[in-house]
Structures are given as C-alpha cells and as structure tokens.
Amino acid sequence: MKNKIVIDGKSLTLESVMQVARHGALVELSNASVEKVNRARKYVDELVDSKKVVYGITTGFGKFSDVVISKDETKGLQRNLIISHACGVGKPFDEEIVRAIMLLRVNNLSKGHSGVRIETISTLIAMLNKGVHPIIPEKGSLGASGDLAPLAHMVLVMIGLGEALYKGERMSGAKAMKAADIDPIELTSKEGLALINGTQVMTAVGCVTAYEAVQLLKLSDISAALTMEALNGITDAFDPRLHAVRPHPGQIKTAENVLKLLKESTRTTRQGEIRVQDAYTIRCIPQVHGASKDAIQYILDRIQIEINAVTDNPILFPEDDVAFSGGNFHGQPMALPFDFMGIALSEVANISERRIERLVNPQLSNLPAFLTPHGGLHSGFMIAQYAAAALVSENKILAHPASVDSIPSSANQEDHVSMGTIAARKAKEILFNAQNVIAIEMLCAAQAIDFAESGKLGKGTEVAYKIIRSKVDKLNEDRVMHLDFEKIYDIIKDNQLLSEVEKAIGELAH
Figure 1 (cartoon, rainbow, N blue to C red):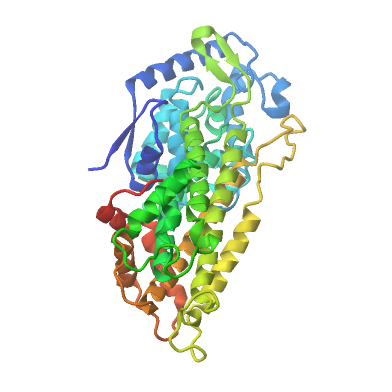
Figure 2 (figure 1 turned 120 degrees about the vertical axis):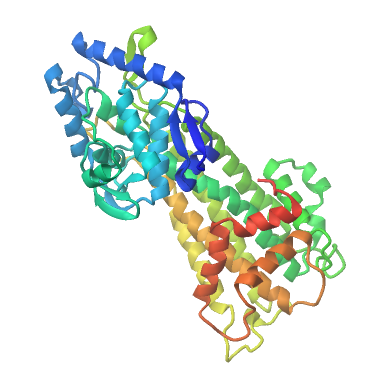
C-alpha cells in the first residue's frame, strides 16, 4: 500500500516530497487547510463583489495592472492568463519533477493565503494521485514573477488543454483527464494567477537535485576511500584531533566517514611508513568534500523554508481584510542557493577527477599505466580519465551563476528577475556529470586495487568493492567502457551501492 502524505502547508519535508515525486505516495489535504482555503476563497468573492481594485483579482497582470476587469470578465481573464503564459520551450521535465511541482503548488495553496477554491486544489491532488502528469517544458522561466511559463503548462491540463503523460502514454490533456476520470475545471477570479505565480518549478528541480546531492557526497567519500586503498593512503590526515581544531561540520563528518569506511584495512598506511604525506586530493578530502557538505546543508535549510512558504501574488490575509501585492514570487532566495549547489557539486567532481589521474598516471603511483596489464596493445582506462575531465570541464562552465544575470520583462514592470530556475536546472546537470565522474573513479579504484599488493580492505570499502565487481569485471582486455560506466552510474543513482555500504557500517554522515 502506498504511503499517504497529509498536506497542511507547514509540515512538508524533502523526504516527503521525494515520497510523492519518486515513489508515488498519495496526497490528502488536512481538515485545517480546507478551512483556511475556504475562508480565503470567501474573501476573494467579497473583493470581487465589492469591486475593490486588487491586483490580479480585479485588474490585469504585469504592465496591465492598471486595467480594471469587471466581474463578468474574471473567468475569461484567468483562462487567457494560462493560455497566453504557456510559452515553455525545450524537452519536458521528468515525471518526478512534474510530480514535485504539483505537490509544492498544492502545499503553497493549502496555506489559505491564495484564494483558490477547494475544488481547484482537489483537482490538482486528483491528478497527482491518479498519475496525470502535465507535459511541462524545461525552459522559459525567468524565476520572477515566479515560474510563470512552466506552471502555466501544468494548469493547461487542469482546464482540459495542453498535453499530459498518463500510464506512460503522451496524450492531450483532455484525453488524460477523461481517462483518469477527473473533470477539468473552469478557473475563476484569482485562480489562474494563484496557480502560476510562484517558485515551485525551480524549487522542485532543486529538491530532487539536493536529495541526490546528499547521497552523492556520501558516495564521494566512498570513492575517495577506495582510491586510498589503491594508493596506500595515509590515514593520519583524517585523525579527529586534527579536524577538531578547525571545526567545520562537513570537514569533521568527512574525516569520520573515511575512517569508518577504512576501518580494519591493512592497505592504508601511517605517515612516514611509505611517504610523509599524500597529495592534496587525498590529504585534503575532508576539507574539500566537507566544504561541499556544508554548502548542501545550507541549501537544504533554504529548501525546507521554501517548500512550506507562500510565494504567489497578491497574498491574502482574510482575517485582517487585506491583500498585499508584494514580491514573494521572486526566486532570488532560491536562485543563490541553487547556484551554490552547482558550485559545490562541481568541486566534488573536480577533486574526484584528479584522484582518477593519480590512479591512471604511472608517474604518480606504482600502478601500471592506465591500469591495464597490456599497455600499448590495450589502452585500459586512458580515455576513462578523458571522459571524467570532459565532464569536469563542462561543470566549470555550468557552475557560472545564473543569478548574477537579470533581463527586465513586462515592459520594465518586472525589471529584476532571479533566473533561479536556470540555476536549479544547471545544478541538476552538474549533479549528473558529478555522478558519472564518481562512477569512473570507483571503477578505476577497483581496478587499481586488483593490481595492488594483497591486503585486507576496510569494512566499508570491501562492501563497495564487491558491489562494483558484482556489476563489472576486472578489465584485462579493452572493451566498450561506456557500458561499464552505465552499470556503476545505475547503482549510484538507485542508491544500491550506498545502501549496502551503510547496512554494513552504519549511516554515513552528511
């Protein structure tokens, strides 16, 4: 039986977002939220009936905010808003991203500050629970006034237009809604604006990326520990006393993780046994990985705030008889963290690629050149390092912050925008590249371990090594390595490798 997530506008967590987005958990609105939504809706109706001038309720949008709209025109205004704003470009978001978008929109509306009808929220919930997933193009949002274009594509399906995926088939929105036995809605005053004016697209992409980033940071500690096994890494640099005098949390956690993974290893060394110190890519693993951990924790904190925030406009306070036209839709509070996430993940891949170089370059180790027993006739892992270097180089370009840019829109009414959705999408692409670099390091480290002198692996590294070898055999003769990469990427992506390691040694810190 599927899990159920009760939406109340204040208790959503990243884990529950992923339960709905990735694992199909069902969604239900709390009784308290129903009351708040109905109260706010009553207030909207009162504003319309009294002909009070309130942005987006009795006026046009953006530069047209000075155009007053009559009560008879409100439904047409909202429908036209959705149709005109559905200007997305590019390939569609993955279904799990779309589900996260829908969930976050429901949570935003459930707080009772937006003024939509309960029927409108119920329609969105029904689509989530029955698997009607709108086709939402990835590109076209400036990140203020929120994610207008992509969210408009979500709403198209709600009103029986657009396209959707239903049970794996792409079809018209009307057909998908009919197949799922959901009646399309007719939007009324405030509803179109409430559905598209917010940061849910950038935040949904950021949620999925941050969730996998936490896993990747643990996996990067595992891949680094495997490399230390192959290169007889010196463990003194991970001594807790060393990190206690520079107590950055991520640095301390990383050092603990590596020692935990290497516990009982006979392949690692102490300073002075073989050499006095290791190169930075080994010796400074706690400092580099740890800085990225601290960055991701900061981003997780921002996400936790945003997924339970009200981000549309105007925002209603029925109990105070006031509707504020403000700027909570502006994506800057998330644009900066998502740019930071891209930088943090880029550095994880950066140091990993340098460890790969130490494994394949015979001038930097006692291992065979490019980890092949038949150098010359066979190239071994030569181009594996090329591929990692290409991914790292691409990440350096992608890590340029999107949030430092702004292009005015709506006739300069919306004259500073966040580009937060671009920041989130870039971070997701950097994550993909980093996952593949870590996969390549794991393969190289496993190969190097096979060449190294015999000895016992650590409690955690032994589990990781065995899982890698259960998927990919030692490379004795050249083969299509792309297929090997994919196998290791898959067990990174589906959390199989990390899960098995943590079962053996306990949860790694993040």
